[in-house]
Length: 164
Image 1 (cartoon, one colour):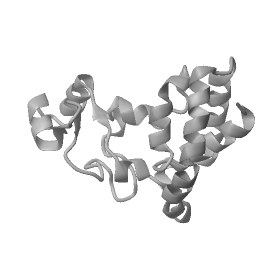
Image 2 (cartoon, one colour; image 1 turned 120 degrees about the vertical axis):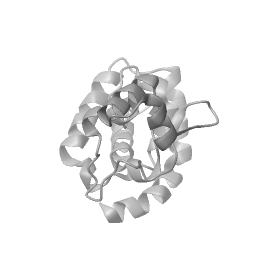
Image 3 (cartoon, one colour; image 1 turned 30 degrees about the horizontal axis):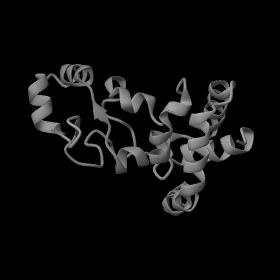
Image 4 (cartoon, helix red, strand yellow; image 1 turned 135 degrees about the vertical axis):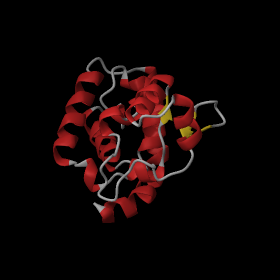
């Protein structure tokens, strides 16, 4: 996995134009069975991929925190929401709560999440490859390809299964 992670940014860069064109076509005319195929590809990939071997998303990016995430995590940590915000979060240029720094504060050395049961919605749903109306999140998927090996492999398989 570590070797593939080293190669991933370059692999993603080499495929970026191809992927962007593919997703542009996908948005304009999504296949009827797109969500079904994506669920199948997602499930197959995550039978062979163990996120604990990677955790690159936690090491290189941070999730957005909704107000509900803040409330839930603060309660879990026995903090007031404002204390949690002051200690761990900042407001980004789009006016969203994000982590003050990466890697994620809650990532343990063994790649386990210290707040896994109450983790942010963005973390629970990452990498979003099993989302309904998948064509609507192509911009997110393009951003996740250089970060997540599973996303890279899912998109490569998707292009084979659903040629446009």
